[in-house]
Image 1 (tube, rainbow, N blue to C red):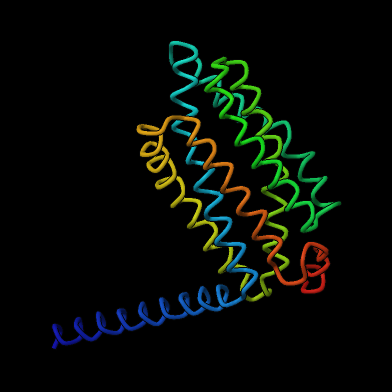
Image 2: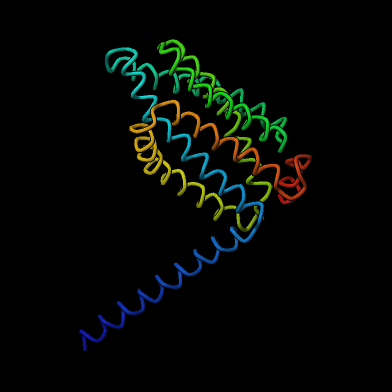
Length: 227
């Protein structure tokens, strides 16, 4: 009898877990059924992979330019200090001026700056690498909140948690996949190819923004109306 009870309890728990999984998957499917949400998430995943894509090239070049690990540490320090100093003001700016036009423009700037890292193949200087890293991070401090505002605007209230869940999962996946893909491109083609491809990922996001329903003129008022 005790064994039967244990089997019954285990079966009930499995059924409950299966039902919970079905509910979660339903929320994810419902979020991705929204065209604009799916388009933004797809572009965001590609961009996130591209952001990690060039990490391997940056580490390799900063090590090479400085003849040691100190250059690599300096590169990461430049990234983090820039974020620390700029995230607050950039977030406030986006909060006042959030729009698809801002997201589109900032993604274009990201594409230009990311592609400009290819200059390091012709001017192998550590100071230039640091300068480009700082410019990229300054722009990224605007791009990230602008993207989040637009995603919130497009996702219905009941689907926002699922949309955020997909985005969070994609960020973790990008940290795994991006550096690996970057290394696979870096070895045969060099750093310039890595940086050019990274620039293309941001250009892809900018193009995706233009394809959202309503065009570039739609603003964060969409989100406000859903509160």
